[in-house]
Image (cartoon, rainbow, N blue to C red; front, side, top):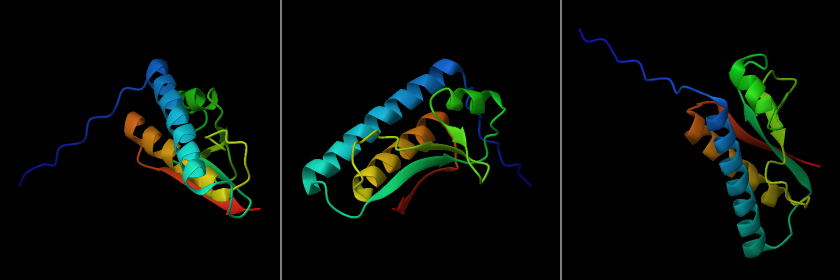
Length: 121
C-alpha cells in the first residue's frame, strides 16, 4: 500500500500576497476593458465580487487580504467588491473583471476556494 503524498503548502508572506493582489487587480482591469472594447457598455445593471472561502479573517493570510480591501461577509468568506474598479453598472463587464481576479488569486496563492460572484441590481 502506498501513501499519497501531501501537496506542498505555499508559504505565504506579505510580499507574495501583495504581488498576487496587484497582478489580480491588473488582470481584472484588463479583462473588464477587453469586454467593454468588444461588447460596449450594455447588459443589465449589477454587481460582481470575489469570495475567498476557507481563510479566517483573523488569520495571517486573512489580515493580509483585508489590507488589500477584502472584508468578511455574512457567509464567513472574505469578499472584495468590484475588483476591476470598473466605473460601470454592466454586470457582464464587472463579471469579467471578477473572474480574472479570482483566477489570478487562486493561481498565485494556491487557494482552492476562490470564486467570482455576481447579482443583478
